[in-house]
Amino acid sequence: MTDKIFAIADGLCGAGEEERELLRILASAAESRVRKASEGTDTAEDILACAAAWLAAADLLTARSAARVERITVGEVSLSPDGAESSRAEALRRQAWRLLNPAGGDGFAFLGVRG
Image (tube, rainbow, N blue to C red; front, side):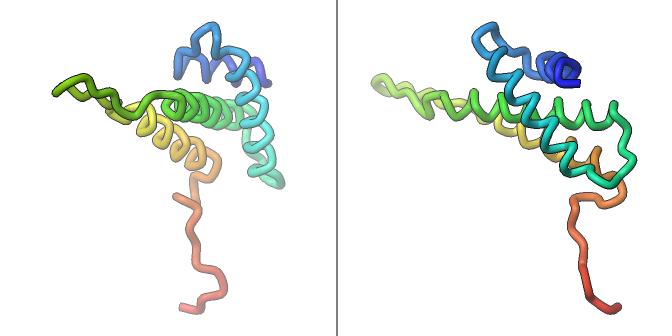
């Protein structure tokens, strides 16, 4: 299933040739995370693959933004990244966990509270 996760993640984030090995590792790690998170459930393999791919793509986007320069200033001109990759990464992560836990929303619940 790691190859399927890799292919989906690559389509989402467009990994460059130099990023492909990292994305394969991230895909394998994401597969392990979603399998562990879904233990004891009857979650379909396609859902697991999609959620893992979204997590792997998010991890690659995060790695890209962490490796970039925060700000470049030359004279009076200053350039800084817009944070779009970080925002995309966070959106992919939220959606992946929602996919794995559709009834639970964001995973928040009151336990042991009588109403």
